[in-house]
Length: 184
Image (tube, rainbow, N blue to C red):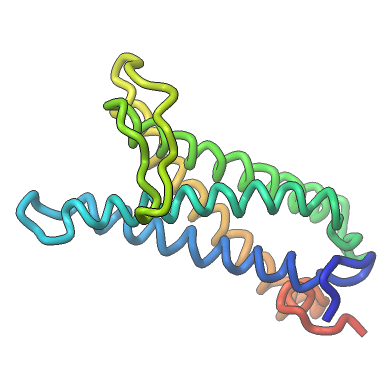
């Protein structure tokens, strides 16, 4: 398999990043929903948010690489069978997902650093608190974080359903291309 994308195929870097980000986003979403139900005396009360923040910061780095990689290795051209609506919808969905994901991570940063403390990433290094002390910073950022997380889950589910529709109803190569299968 090729590292970079071609005009017809996704390369292994793009495919790997796509699925890694998807799995990580769903894992963070599930962890986030679970951790807000924990009581103060629960053993995971402090540990779960630290894991959530650490993985979220690493995901931010992966997403930055993903954006840069998109310029280094542009995605394959759309299939000729796609209608104009399909092409525009796909572009719009991807742009919204990217923007929402970065906004989720930024709002998570604002929640985590509202008290002026850095974010400790698995004890390896810390991300400094540069924006602190804004009025109701943690509460407003928390609301944004929650609603955007739900929006990303819904949009990504629609994205997945569209890929399944392309595979089973349209019989085209959309899903196979993102699974690394040959388009021949």
